[in-house]
Amino acid sequence: MHESTSSDGWGGADERLRSLLGTLEELRARCSRAEHEFRHALAEVRPSHRASARNVVHYVALRRLDLRRIQADLARLGLSSLSRSEAHVMGSLDTVIGVLGCLNGGGRPARLPARLEGHSLRLERNADRLLGPLAIDRATRVMVTLPSDAADRPEVAAELVKAGMDIARINCAHDTPAAWRAMAEHVHTAATAQGRTCRIAMDLAGPKVRTGPLPLGPPVLRVAPRRDRRGVVLAPAPLWLHDGSSNTPAQPGVTEVPVVPEGVLSGCHAGDVIRLRDARNATRRLLVVEVRPNRVLVEVGKTTYLETGLELELRTDEARVTATIGSLPRPETALRLHVGDELILTRIPDEPEAGAAGELRVSCTLPEVFDHARVGHRVWFDDGKIGAVVAERCADELKLQIIDARPGGSKLRDAKGINLPDTELPIPVLTAQDEADLATAVELADIIDVSFVRSAADVELVQDRLAALGAEQVGLVLKIETVAGFERLPEVLLAAMRSKHIGVMIARGDLAVEAGYERMAEVQEEISWLCEAADVPVIWATQVLDQLARTGRPSRAEVTDVAVAARAECIMLNKGPHIVAAMETLLDIDRRMREHQHKKQSLLRRLRAWDHGLAGG
Picture 1 (cartoon, rainbow, N blue to C red):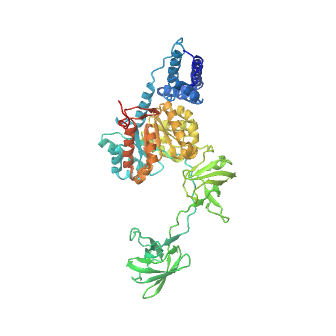
Picture 2: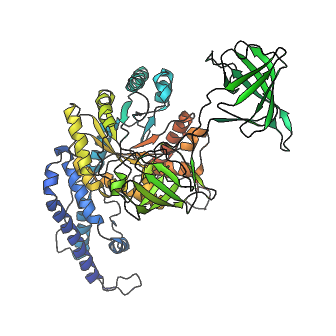
Picture 3: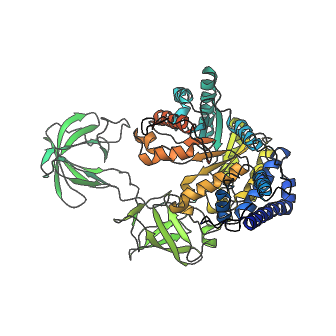
């Protein structure tokens, strides 16, 4: 080969080729050393997964280096830049090394790789066995979360199966075992009737950290007439008063208020007036317009605040009678938090409300948080809507400073999720409730989804429980939704490969909160690449076509998201009134994209879009 002094950087080409060849040989040796280092872990992998496990080890070893300079050099020679090496790391290296050997004078034999297509066949086989066979005209499968009414309405499952649902997801965080059984039965019946297969995935709730109860608000009810924009009353507000002797509402959509004692309304007539001083001490008159047994309909002409124990004076033709408003419901409350506010997170749910000095408090459902959170650790509430950082800590409290909220403040309610991405929490992957649910789940499920997997030990615990239940053949899907789970994914996958059928769900809701939204794009890609190296099928989840499922109209961003998601072996849709429309859109996009993209590889099918753009053949 002749030397070149051109501006492409390949002056002294023979020397550069030898250097590049040596670098790739060292990369290959590095992968071999990694395989030897992890030989004991590889030996514990199920034999059917062993080749995939070795490839995972090779891939991790390769990606621990910055390969961009090497890639640029290979691209200048028109060779593979290793950007599609997930599937077969050693084979890719061997191919490039062999070609470089020939270019370097041919004095050394080219190393001939094994057949590279074997990997894709393993991945397809694993996906079929876990998720069910792939329809001939599709690139991916569809998982749908069943709504609660799917237990009572068989037509829900029938409609979803007809629309193309491949896997029905039953969320064990909701409903009851009896409802789960009914849902599964309806799915199987619908699939059989339509000559299709549809698998059942039971999703365990996992150790979700949430805010504890907030105190209920005062038992006050606001009743207001309808007004125009100028505040002029257009129509009085209707209100039913009843003595509690009947539980049946008199009129749908009209507020009802109990009064005591029983029978106090029996002397009322249309046209009577009920007087009161409301919760603000404002004088108000309620006009009786209709009388029924044990209840009267009144009209309220001015905004009125009613509360439990408020006295009413009923003026009738015969007498004046005093009554009292009975027990009104206490509404849920919320804390409004602004950037710069101080929030006390407490271990003990002791009426955590604003104190005398305006102190904001809320409890946490997981006591371990207070033992392991440290000053400077981040805390996110309600799917990342509110951000905070630990400013001070003591045994039973964390003093948080709010660092992220809406300009006008964000409301924090009870039972909202808490994410602590910087805090290592030593909690089991299966809660006591999960353990109980698992016994039912294995009877119904083809797949068990395990939430908040963070380590190989978590996987081993679930495998032990499945073995104890005699359910080792059930498919195991690991939901990656924490930073810890993402960072330990190689070890998690090696542990999972002791099971027969495995998959990974990219649970992008909690994962985006923990990793940060700005990192989510790269994190979901990196999970996909590693799973491809492991021949492990991926389920792409959380808010896929969510707006379309809820409202009937998609956003532009979520349509683009589906185009990326279509590279996964399965896509999960959540429930919604327009879920069938969401499925139809998803499958339409999938059919289009399958001709253009497979994983990271662009497919160059014939394009007709620009047939008339340029002249010539």
